[in-house]
Length: 332
Length: 204
Image (tube, rainbow over all chains, first blue to last red; front, side):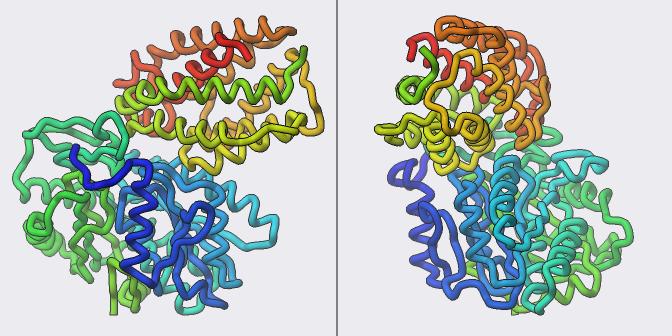
């Protein structure tokens, strides 16, 4: 697989250098420079929000550091969790004196290292809470929702919790806002072609040129079915049907939609899908609020898309519309 | 002679040397059940562990603690973090001692196994590195000398690989390939077995 890189061993560090050079609002910090934080530092008196995970998913995770979103991020090697030291440094960088929410996807390495970091820091008296992104409906059955992976839908939790923190809410209130955003968000992805970790022997999975796979994860985790590539409308219909089948209990009629590229799929194809998705949601009696179309959570050169639906209530809708700014997403 | 820092340093050097050929073997094994980077990740971990200087250190616990910190600094991957957890557990249990009788290796590995299970959430039988660690700690019970430890550890790893090869993976990313994983080695278990073999067969 062709990649425009210098050395696989320098892939992450050179990427982070470039990211911060292009966006002076971000600063590299922490052990081995594997923390990205807001250049202006944590805002005193505000609950901090920290995230983290493996590289290879830009704009996730580092790209969402900014006002109204996330305060700091620990970043690991490609598809590897961040180290415990970088998790500790990121938590400290996000700390404005009112506690820190750890908000990240449900993956083993991320969980272990954020947990260990918390165990060390709680001894120092820092108040912490945790919310895990678990929006990928293809990764476990509804009765095992807590085992699901976090994928693109986590950006809704960043936005809603970030806005709540900006309002001056307490750690418990920010945590509740993040947990509600996770609870109200559903995502499903599909892939047309794999990606390959720099330096790895093989692509993350193999798929024939004529095939697609529904339900695949952002690291190439296996999906629900693999078959001949279908037309965009058929793909959109199936994704909408699967997500609506898991509509959260008590949800209303307003929903935000994220049509996300996994990396190689162009905006043109995303809009072809969005056209159909919007029609289907309208027919289902759902009003679309603040649609998002573009690359929000990728897997390097993987071809494919994910669809996320965030079922809103009035408070979530207000928080989603509140001002926020990061290198890849601006609201207000 | 008992286990000392000299043995530990020599073991790290042997494992580090083994990664030159093992890296791609593990990447290929992982690409069948994961994302294909277990070899590259472990190579980085052992690169950093091998850089740690043990000159002037004779406390077994201190040396294991240095290696645990190196592993934790090199990666945040699940397997690397579990390795750091196991080393840190053994470090705490041996701090202040310059020699550990070979007969104490079994209980030390049992404690490491329990800490790894608590951190990672795997159970015995899930076909993970925990099962290899459990096989070795069980096999070493009663082994009182270095030659016996080496032979039993290598045999236990081989047996664990064979025993679990036709079982499905029940943990981590590989659990999603449960059917496909039957007939394949778990990459973490394979790594543990190959590195144990490299340390024990060539002797430290």
